[in-house]
Image 1: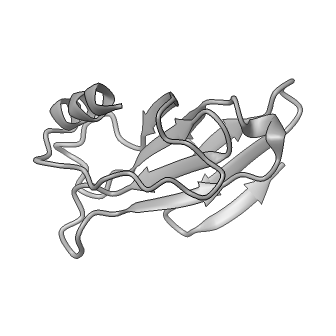
Image 2: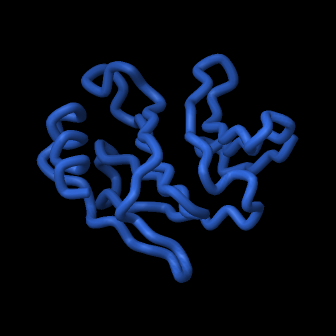
Length: 119
């Protein structure tokens, strides 16, 4: 996990990310994948980093936000069909999404307006 966070710090060109918080009955040692709302953090000062862990935890952070100290927002996804899925960002729809196992269910989170959608 430390190597992954150090790699994120180098990619994002930020001095530090806040420490991850593990939700009850979750784990933050095995990361499924990481997704960002911007391919160019230098140009987008309000980008979001999403980290999907194996299991129910999904975490978001805005590391470059100047109005407040960066912190993780943690979501526990109750439906087990999302526990081994990856998180992705849709630039077209401006939302993060997680595809359920089997591809029949998509969960999306519009973090910019904090609305959750399950399709």
